Length: 266
Ligand SMILES: NC(=O)c1ccc[n+]([C@@H]2O[C@H](COP(=O)([O-])OP(=O)(O)OC[C@H]3O[C@@H](n4cnc5c(N)ncnc54)[C@H](OP(=O)(O)O)[C@@H]3O)[C@@H](O)[C@H]2O)c1
Image (cartoon, rainbow, N blue to C red; front, side):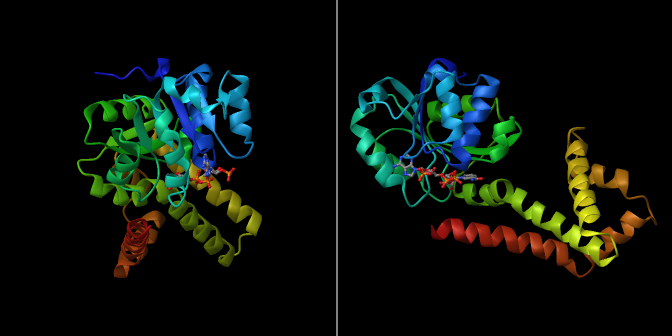
């Protein structure tokens, strides 16, 4: 069963970094037509203005929400009750709430909205239809609705349990920043070896792009590593040095467990 969100009214609450990225991806792929979108945003945003040009309504009178089938909640976790509560009486009973917020339990959103909730944890690369999105709901229709909304813009990974959402947030949502930080570290190490900062930054960014291109082959990570690291070669020497003493594993584990702990404390 596939939910046909393209004909449903989609309300986006919050048009910040992630809200804008989702808008861009949906409009670029046609996953949601501009005329099916309502955007609620306290301030003017370029992505919302671009969507307006495609027929989206920005901050219309709240009666317009009665046509909505899906409400995507994309405000900061500390803000969501204030954002959602005044809207609930305008929502029809079949509405699905899709929350992309880190660390906010679906039960809490259900208790305020009284509507089925799906949780999705996407990356901002949904803007380029290259995102990844962990997804969970205990309601089958909410799950299908969220999948239909995100499959055109992300690789969607369903989770078995909502409790795994925090781990998925760390491994997918936060991880691009972890990887950028590592690549920055590589560039700094290149400078320590005599490269100019410009050359090191350019080479490190290029390495990240090349790593991304490797993923496009569909091969597993071990196979991709094996392609580059020939026995006794320079890459193998670097990999062995990273593995020695477990520093790399420890850095990854520390980053993921700190992100999970932070999500649980929100
Ligand atoms: N950024 C990411 O990579 C990412 C990834 C996964 C999940 N998330 C989740 O996505 C959510 C949003 O994150 P973000 O990075 O996009 O934050 P953000 O850039 O701060 O965006 C939040 C937006 O919410 C708007 N807002 C505040 N009160 C509102 C209200 N009452 N009605 C409608 N909009 C309201 C703000 O508007 P103003 O700008 O006008 O104040 C702001 O633009 C968070 O819960 C976060 O956990 C983010």
